[in-house]
Length: 339
Image (cartoon, rainbow, N blue to C red):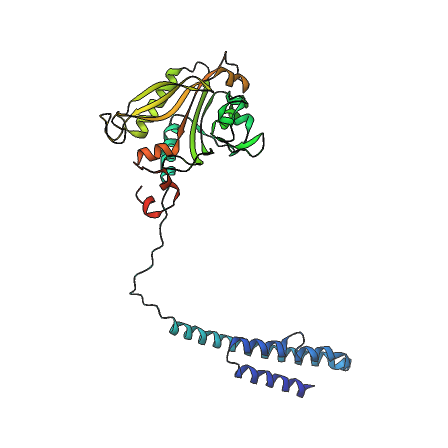
């Protein structure tokens, strides 16, 4: 048995010394030390060894295994070192070559405008609230005083999924959801993506963004609305900006108004941007309709409020003098880097 183990050990050591790569070394390991290797077969034949000789044979097998393992580790280190040296010779790096600088991303004009807008309203104590883009008809229309036969609910204007579920056409449903909680006072802005069945052109898209604001509390008047929007316009467009309110109609506010600001390009003197008028239409607003308050569970005899809606793309186009809305969605880095 001793001679047989010695022969196995010598053959293993000879195979190790002849190995030229890691694959050959692994073959040697499996052949001599694996579960079906030669040393394992010796151990499986221990039942044929006399009981008094088994400890001695077991010790001899373990010594042979230890020697073979040590030689394998030693040869493995040698081969790994040789492979590394060969790799370093074949992969020479010229440190004088210029490096490859990774391309930097850039914030989108919409996001820049939204961050500036949120900064102003958060500074005035508003909370930013978001809601689902797939909305119930009840929140998108009914609670906002838009009845079933209203033109805005026509399938040519609105993306309906079912009779009662649609892609929201405005972020006003967020206002309805907040009012429905009954927690007063309310002072929020609701930014988000909205959807309308519009053809794509320089000023329209079936998917765009709005930022709507809502304040509900005791004693809120139109003067509070006017002062709030004046403050925002001066912070956003410049301290010399003036605001003009024109009567308008929205189903969910009464009275309602369209808001113009003095052209921030010419200061109100008249130019190409404002089409010579000195004013730019910027948003719609009004006092929250008493029916909207009552439908959302708020007593209009106790509480009043105002709301406004701003088209994010519109103010981004105006502020950065972009003449085609489609440029905002083409993701051309050359265009985005200008902002």
